Length: 394
Image (cartoon, rainbow, N blue to C red):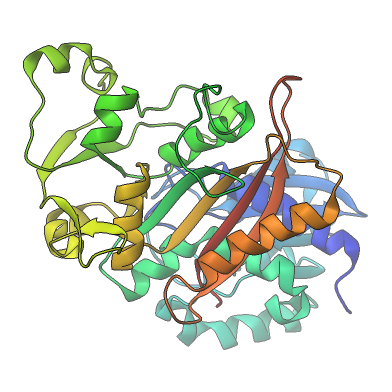
């Protein structure tokens, strides 16, 4: 049987659930599960925290709690949707595939194959048993490419760590449509309130936030998370540790007493690292760090698996020039732009995408998503968000 529109709909509900665990599930993958009976959700769950029950277990327990008297019959008549292939090996918890066998679901639908080598040996045997039980298996090859890309992207950091000791680095950029990252005198912020709220979510799901001394002194940012877990659609929130890249100057004690990142620091480590002065490699070249950034950051690259860069144009340019990134999350303000001028908006989008596609000089980056971010404030502007990342196809 081919997947239906309902299948895509329920897989996207799995994605929404999976993201709730994005702060605490790591180093495990984030996973969401939905159990569906006659196109109605019977139970749902997600992996909340590393070492705790997996998404499939939580969804089945939810379905049982809702239907204590006849859950076995209902489960055997249901489909189970999972954003990541169910595990069939013993880790900190038993194999999820055993529960799926036990309740003899009609169909198992998953959108991303788990590349974990521990899965390979038992996969074929487990699937043979499922088929023998009458469970149909629908894997990633049978779903739309758009849905598969979104599904694979969910666990980009997990897949990256299976192959590399280096962190996953996300560069956050906020700019106007002309590419400028400097806030205009007439504006308090470049992007709208919903875009800025999203950035707080990005902070919470990363372990280290890197910025530069100029950003700290000029903007006096807090660089912490100031929304609730409900507002950010997370099971839990945290502040990332902070790394301030400096040139030769230090913070005076007077500055420290006034700067938000020091006065509001709670449950986070603030690191400071001196690097070489920013200077062009050659006349007319963009400003970059004289020394290799990778070498300067060795200690932090090993210690923190998920890193976000929030900095000004000079430091951002340095990271990009060094190729020290895996992902770029770019928020573009469309303030002053006629949103209804489709061709103009498409040209802006194409220009931004062209910039990002050639960053590495190869084809490792892919476009993950392009979306408009509306605002609830009538005086605020519409933003365009573009996400590009290293390919994570499984």
